[in-house]
Image 1 (tube, rainbow, N blue to C red):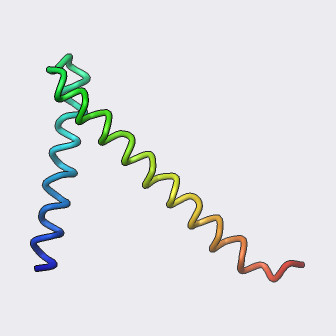
Image 2 (image 1 turned 180 degrees about the horizontal axis):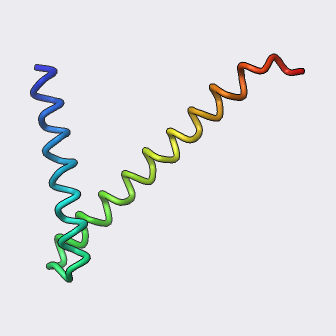
Length: 64
């Protein structure tokens, strides 16, 4: 079951990347919409990773 979920996420990610490339080459409107959603989701993941790294790095110094 876990493999099926991981495979689904992988298919969605690859499909989103394809839509981003296709949208750069003036694809149809629905492709530009999917590309926009893909880029927004990637930005959210990137920001959450930065916050997580900041919290890990900031909490280990002991406050001195």
